[in-house]
Amino acid sequence: MLIFDLSRPGRRAAAQSVGPALAPDDLPAELLRQAPPPLPEVSELDAVRHYTRLSQRNFSIDTHFYPLGSCTMKYNPRACNAVALLPQFAARHPLADADTGQGLLACLYELQEMLKAVTGMAGVSLAPMAGAQGEFAGVAMIRAYHHARGDRARSEIIVPDAAHGTNPATAMMCGYSVREIPTDRDGNVDLDALRAAVGPHTAGLMLTNPSTLGVFEQRIVEIQAIVHEAGGLTYYDGANLNAILGRVRPGDMGFDVIHMNLHKTFSTPHGGGGPGAGPVGVSERLLPYLPVPIVVEESGYYRLVGEEERPQSIGRLSAFGGNMGVLLRAWTYARMLGREGMRQVADYAALNANYLAAELKRAGFDLAYPERRASHEFIVTLKRLKEATGVTAMDFAKRLLDYGFHAPTTYFPLLVPECLLIEPTETESKATLDAFVAAMIKVREEAMREPQLVKTAPHNLPVRRLDDVRAARELDLVWRGQSS
Amino acid sequence: MNIPPDLRYTKTHEWVRLETDGTVSVGITDHAQDLLGDMVFVENPTVGRQLRQNEECAVVESVKAASDVYAPVAGEVVAVNDELESAPERLNQDPYGSWMFRLRPDDPAALDGLLDAAAYRALIEAEGH
Image (cartoon, rainbow over all chains, first blue to last red; front, side, top):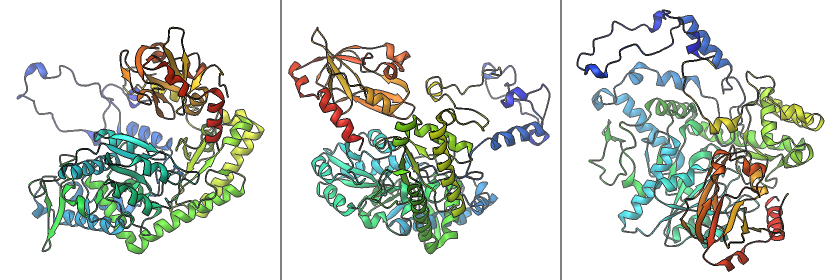
């Protein structure tokens, strides 16, 4: 039921009422509406019940274990929200003077410094408003660097086949062609293929480490040497930064540019498409190209610096300075944890992943990379189960919903057949992990005994199996005035 | 796994059939459609486009992923199967009966460089590790 279906003429919510409308007498008459827009007319109680009910139908971090691999769905501390919602922050106009916003600018400056410290990069810009925008800014800086040196022959970005789909997409958006290189049996980049791929056409390599296979790239130093000797730059996709936070720094691994997903590693909320934040960090040689604005501190005074003072910058990514509410949450998170807490994030994320992997292996599940220690996530392949019962990874995932667990990531990375990519994160207790293992065992038993039950799951949720083929082909998000 | 013996194959999971008029039909293999799952969109190249060998020239999108389709040999696109635009599920139902596009090869002998059924079977068995 949509809120439009609850509408009754004349019903009002006092809390939402606005003052008398001002006559828009400065607009031409032909542009004015003749009738009010068809908005739902409901009471305050109708609205509260409707949205509360909808929220209860959701799977969310606040209600369920959410082991969605590669997404780092961890608890979002309430303290971070409390800070971001302070009216001194939330009500500030983005064009207000630096003089009246020293507190906000100090937080942003400190966040830049903390991100520099934890990643080992020489400079950080908070401007990108999403992970994808951070990637775009990162590759745009690689391009700006080569062009500034008069090197326009570099036309190619190398991407391992285990990469996030966003990496090739970003390279294409920045005008590069993409060369894919394979992964070896242990989940490392195939070095021979990399050596064969680099040359004077190589602009850079985009790498996620630990990779989406949930393993740490063991020959990172050799990879850096191969790409750098060919004149290319290296890009660190921060998707899995949570696994190494405070332990290993991308800057020390030799990366030239990095983006961070604050909604993953720094525990800001994952939204339905936003708001996000994807700060970028760079090595010394890319400093001039950082997107603006950047916060600088001079004798205790903070201010934003733009294009005038940074003429080689790749420019702005939005009208203002980034998603302040998200940046403030990340600042609070980092401040609460401190240096020692950051290390513990990675320690417990790795411990939880390895515990879960070991328990599932002990229960007879197949790990995709059994020889490797999990970094912070790992892959189970249900290939044998599918061959024996016809139950697919998707069916299995849907049945887990019935047991109150959000499904792990399915069918990613595509390299591994019938896979579940599982990332518990550091915020889950052993009891939760054990309950998840029990549910995995239960669903497997059901698949063996009564495959149809699993193939038609979910059974206990507000909706049954959704028709994702039709949803993709006939996507329709517009209310057309009648209930369905 | 259905791998008809009379077709040629690529490492990127296209099948290729030499037609009597000297053109070749190209589609995706049973293995490819099985891995990708239910198809939701097919984007074919435009007729008349000149393709290099291994050039990305079409896209198939399933509920799991969007994947590029590559030109198995160099040549000109002489026809595309428009039916797939409205019925992409045909690629799942009948992968070898559902050609995507037809090429006129620049060099008919280039087909000899493609995999035969036995070599393709060995390839997917090796990939399945």
